[in-house]
Length: 173
View 1 (cartoon, one colour):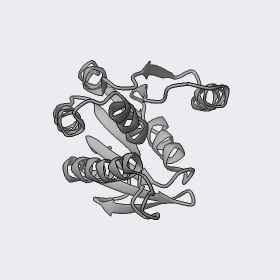
View 2 (tube, helix red, strand yellow):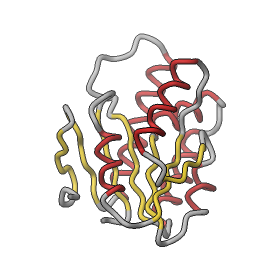
View 3 (cartoon, helix red, strand yellow):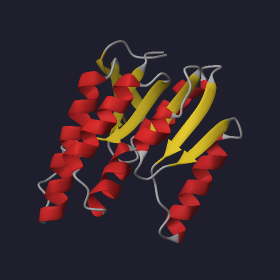
View 4 (cartoon, helix red, strand yellow):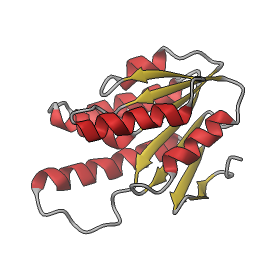
């Protein structure tokens, strides 16, 4: 598996399931870095269902913002799934941090990581132009983040309707 793989897709496209299947095909220690925060019962139920779906052979690290620290704590024989950059970016925006500095630090951490890393992110630029400033700011930042990570990734995979397709490098099997 490549050192850094980016898996992109729309909401409910199957990108997380695809990324999980790549990790499960390895015999490495599996680490799931979760960026979601459970602010309501629906999200708590979704998170619980995802944990059950992954099964007991995963170590979960809940990390809504400080991804660099979580990445640096992973060992060379680990395979790490970060799910997802879209929620991480939302968390960063809502805490009013310097978004570009946070993105640059994240990309540097991903590029220098010793573990094998798969990153899941939403492709949000194919819809309509949002009607409010925060949504436009988010869409623009998400596009920049995806481009930065894709530039440094060995492999970039798109997922649509549960079907993966290679955007950069060979399609991991």
